[in-house]
Image 1 (tube, protein in one colour):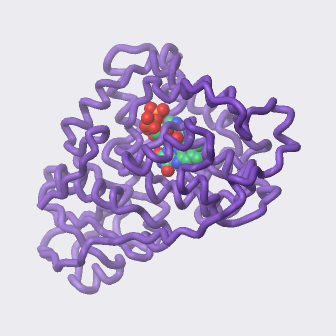
Image 2 (tube, protein in one colour):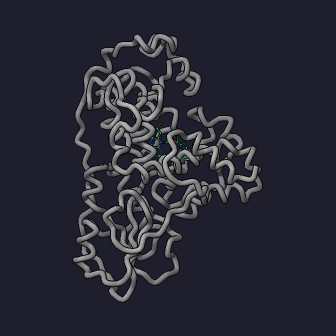
Length: 372
Ligand SMILES: Cc1cc2nc3c(=O)[nH]c(=O)nc-3n(C[C@H](O)[C@H](O)[C@H](O)COP(=O)(O)OP(=O)(O)OC[C@H]3O[C@@H](n4cnc5c(N)ncnc54)[C@H](O)[C@@H]3O)c2cc1C
């Protein structure tokens, strides 16, 4: 039975997802994307789950007749996603540690209790965290504000709070997540990102004053951690995978492996293959996700990929238990390093590959492929 998710903000039927792609307003996006009620696309849960690619989104938007120049901001933001993915591919697990510089200063390796409980006293942030627990989504600017007060005001090391956010995000993507947290904390950038109350009021339509962030930018260097952010908390972030059931494998057919990062309904759509959604406990133990995110993933798979079967266990166990003797096919991804079989490439917007120390060096090369 398909699992019902209540997320009207994030429908799971492929036809509805295509409607969301058609609804993108890339021109208004460029003008308003920094405002929390701006014309953002809400496509990240589908891109991160591998239902659609950045290339697919770009081609659908360009099909509507836009000139690349007028929608450059939108293309550039999509490119950020590919940029972080390329770093993950190139750097592997080293993205789990401070990438360019040690984050300094660090006073703790947990998360402020007030952030976790949505009680920082900054109304726009607290309201957003409460909503986040309900929807599994946060606007980009709010992610930056939250990371900034956590790392740069409360002095938490970025990694533990990044896992908290990843846990609750429907668009959980470890590259975008870990590397953005590091970017905010100055571990993957040459300076830290900070925002004051005036900035928050502007982009969140709030009018709050007299908070610990109600200061001028030059005063951030002498800002000490306010009492409200001092208490930290350890969270029991655990994944409850569904109960394992046995599956049926036709050993005369190849087996295609889907996973948390590949739920592409068009992949092998009309081919006679075994389709297995592989949920490896080792992956979810290292990168835990919430029940809401599990339900979202299962619904996307069950609603859009006919005959998909769910296997809970490690890749090697799948192969040995079902004696898989025909081809095993999967899409390239940094978390698939242990798979063995035929690896197919993912779709990218541009040919540019590899590690670029700055997004703008990467983007400069990408832009050459666009017909300006
Ligand atoms: C601390 C922090 C943590 C983040 N964690 C994640 C994460 O786990 N998963 C995730 O997908 N994104 C993450 N992001 C990036 C970004 O916030 C989201 O991709 C974006 O807010 C998703 O909303 P949207 O689809 O409405 O984006 P839109 O603004 O409509 O952008 C369109 C698409 O472009 C891509 N994109 C836009 N901005 C960024 C960005 N800054 N970095 C990477 N890709 C971008 C996304 O694929 C997005 O769907 C994080 C950012 C920060 C600052």
